[in-house]
Image (cartoon, rainbow, N blue to C red):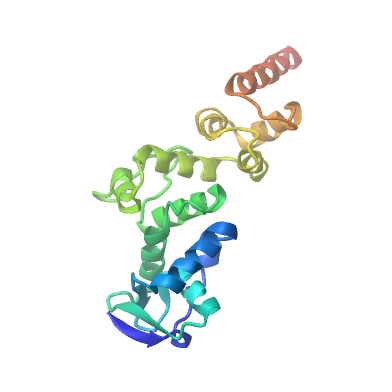
Length: 220
């Protein structure tokens, strides 16, 4: 660990793509803790002074006018993909991050691990000895939660993701029911649902059954 002038550091260029900044009372309380106790945990950076872990500490120090901050340099982080991989793992699961960005983190991290989507829409394809459970452990989450995030992000239409993120449908409904539908079927489902209110799994299934029955009648 060493002390360095804050102006020599630079945020990772993709950090805001994957992670939200703290806001409101939580942000003010965080800044107050930095003001009172200083930066206790050093900011992790690469040799070129790109921040890997500690963007909120960096931002707070900037706002408070703190010039010298503790850093720890990761000499091994040279490759850009490896830098991003460590950044994602270090910040995955941050409580203030929204669900949409969390899913993006999951998909990108899995890609960086070389774990493919495979030939079918819900493949558990693995590269060599790499397993989804190993990746989940690296991210500090369960295999079930990781698989759910990947399935939702890969298989839902953008319109359906919006209904999920605004609370119209739940994660369980999205992952257990809707991800099995094709993109055309999802769009048809959206048109048939009352999306002005929260929709239960039972109601979603009813909508799906009604659509299927209508198709059968038309085909006859």
